[in-house]
Length: 276
Image (cartoon, rainbow, N blue to C red; front, top):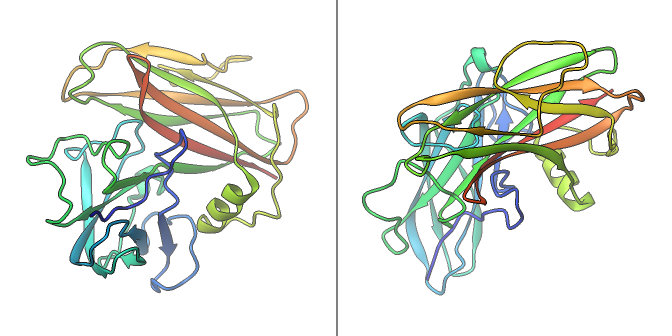
């Protein structure tokens, strides 16, 4: 028997479709992007994929700075919600406490939800890593939406790389183009309050790369991957550099930032670039 928050089955498991935000004072309002400094509500779909009814499931909701690896020690508990689920049932669960994203990050925080029940427990003691790829009770949504108009020459987006117990040797941070199916785009864009009919997917309209330094320069867009060594209880900032191609187009593009240890992807961040 099991209860679980569904983990995205593809490579981008850090962009779970089972977590979404409703900005404003009405938790039953229209989903959209979080608004920094204002009230937002967080929801999650919880599935009981087992063979037994389970009552009193506690769902904890956390926010963390956007990072490829998300830790409990660097995350903040928003609040909790509770749900009873019959065998095979799915319900939407509201975090009862409202969430007010801090202004300094412009609302671009990572969200985590975990379902807790004695009938399908997480390991004790809990590890510092949430590790949603390993545990079906945990889901993560690490998606940033960036408006990058054709009139802008370049843009720099900071991301955080947090140390975990597994980071005892070099980790590789990579950036590459991603792709959404039509079904995925409609669901994700609706969750983010973006009209999916307004934006068509484009390719090779944005130049991009990673850098360890926050600076701009002509024709500098960073590297496709960077090797790092991060000691325990530390973190490091990296920077995503964006630039216009020779033929800028309106539409949207997806960038996937992945963290790899020993050729295994252990974390990620999705950036949606909107171009009017």
